[in-house]
Every structure is written in structure tokens, then in C-alpha cells.
Amino acid sequence: MAKKALLSIDGQDPIELPILAGTEGPEVIDVSSLTGKGYFTFDPGFVSTASCESEITYIDGNAGILLHRGYPIDQLAEKASFLEVCYLLLHGELPNATQKADFDRTITLHTMVHEQLRVFFNGFRRDAHPMAIMTGVVGALSAFYHDSLDINDARHREISAHRLIAKMPTLAAMSYKYSLGQPFMYPRNDLSYAENFLYMMFGNPAEDYEVNPVIARAMDRIFTLHADHEQNASTSTVRLAGSTGANPFACIASGIAALWGPSHGGANEAVLNMLDEIGDVSRVEEFVKKAKDKNDPFRLMGFGHRVYKNYDPRAKVMKETCDEVLAELGVGDDPQLKLAMELERIALEDEYFVEKKLNVDFYSGIILKAIGIPVNMFTVIFATGRTPGWIAHWSEMISGSYKIGRPRQLYLGKSARDIKPLAER
Image (cartoon, rainbow, N blue to C red):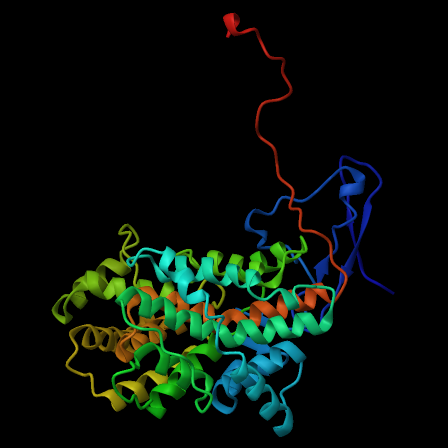
């Protein structure tokens, strides 16, 4: 017999509310019938509300679990490439060898962007934030690719998905090159996804650029570890925009805009800003004391996570990757990285910080700094990695049954009143 919750209001007959169960996670009370009875729920931030059904990602923050289609994130980061994870998010299963080769080839053939987009970049100031550029340029893709905008056509949705995944690193690198005044680098079909991104970021036409395989592997893992994170703010934004019937390029642009917020996608950037504020290894103890003082607003960024109350399952893989990158590049003399490593030592030894755990943002910020990627590009890289997750959620919604998003409100304004003549106001 199906479980039900009974809601009693002022002695009236109880309202029966179905209790739903997913394959993982807590049971959910279906309150969708309340509106018809004159009520709706109040849940700021929707932290207690399931806005949709999904088969893509499961998170248990208390247990430190992150699963993509049932696979633990650490296994995916260690045993699968980013494009395999993209395929998994889009199709529900990891690809076999033939499917992997076909998917890799398809993405590779879509990495170039329309040549007129080069001119589009000229409309931005040289000092424009790369995320401002990405929001505009990704949204503008719908003006260039009219042949895949029918959201009710499964093939159109697939083509748009391939184009977005393929072109994001190209556009990201172009945003960086534009800020430097350097020529854009065209993608190369002989390079992997991560290799191509690094080549377009750091290569130039005047000389050959060899992509370091250790750095490429680290970049691939960074993309993988950010590929999806369930119904976070940016993913929910993509779904909400998609519920209106907007084209996929516009929906992903809305996700990029949401990710730009410092409370969402800017955490690894905040880690580097924090290191700048501390300034020197000699001041670490001073700032550790500030962090422990409940009356001091200072926070150590990269410690703890709003979702993971136990530990961030992505952090272990990212720490290993961080150690590999620092060893490969030999950047031990960099003052900021020395400072980061001292903070890590304290975090692993001091009981106060051991309890809080380092998260993925701490290590990814250090890796990106070591590679030579500027701080204002960190969130762009986050957006590049998160694109397959956004697309998977958008496609899942569009291919199923859905309603246009319409959150309710608790109105606290003036009651109805009449307008007085101007002379009486």
C-alpha cells in the first residue's frame, strides 16, 4: 500500500499527500495537490523541495557520496576520460570501445566555431571579464546554428549537445586570448579534449607548443570532477529556462550567468584571493586563529562544503592530481603555492580543520594557478566542465513531460487600495 502523509489544518479533514520514494535518498512528500486546495508551501532557496525527477546524478552530502548514473565520482575520475563521462551523462551508460571512438570523433569534428564569431569578440572591451564574454558568445551560438534549434526533435537536441560540449573549450580559450590581444588558436583534430584546450590557451602561431601529458590529465580530471552536481543553482537555472521552450544555447548561457555568482562557481577563485589576503607563510598562524574565532568574519576558503557535511568525494582525486602537477612543474618556489601547501598541512593535522575537510575548490584552484591559468578564467573552466551536466538535465527534461517553471511567493506587500488624486497624496 502506497504511503501517505496527512496534513491537518485548523481541524479540517486531513489532506492526503502521497509519499514518493526514489532509488536512493530520502522519501519525498508530493505537495503538488495543495495549490488546488488553496495552499502552497514556503521554502526559501527550495532547499527542501524536489523540483523534478531525474536519473542523472545522486548526492548524499552527509555520507560524502556523488554518483553519476550510479558510478562513484572517484572511479570515473580515475578510470574514465571526460568525454566518456559526457557520454555517460547524456546516454545513461558508459560507452563501449566503438561508441567511445565515434563520440570522441564527433566532438572533435565540432570543435571549430563559425568564423564570424571572431568578429563578434571585437564587440567586447579588452578588459571584459571572460565570464561576461562567455555568457554573450554562448547565447549567440543560436544565431549561427539554426539547423538544430527544434527542441522537440531528438536529433536536433543531440547535435546541439555535441556542438556545445565541443565548442566550449574553443570559446573559453578565445575569451582568454582576446583579453591578451593574442591571435586565436584553431583546435587540432589530433589532440584530445583537454590537450586541445591547453593548446588553444597557451599555444601561439609563432612556435610549436607541446602539451604536457601530466597537465592534460589534470585538466581532464578537473573537467570530470565538475561535470555535474545535481540540482544546483546553475543547473536549476538551465532547467527553468528550458521549461519555457528556449533554445539550448540560450539555456546554457543562462547556466553560465548563474555560475558566475561568487556563491556558486567562484569558490576556487576565492581560494586564490584568500591566499593573496594572507600574503605570506609567516602570517598563516595569524589567519588560522582568525578562522577559528567565531566573532571574526574571516573564512578559510576551500574548507568544508555547503552540500558535503562529511567530506567532498572529489577532493581525494583532486589532491592526488594536485601533487602530480606540482611535482611535474617544480613550482615549489612560488610564494602563493608555498602558502597553499602550508594551509593544506594544517588542514590535515589540526583537529579543527580536519573536521571541516578540504574540498575540491581548494585543490582545483591550486592546480589552475600552477598551470598558469589566470584567476578570472577559473569559473570559465568550471563552466566548460559543467556543460555536459547542464545539457543532460536540459535534454532529460525536454524529452520527458514537464511544466513551465513557476515558483510561488509569500506576498508581504500592501493589500488592494485605491489611487488618490494627485493633490491628496
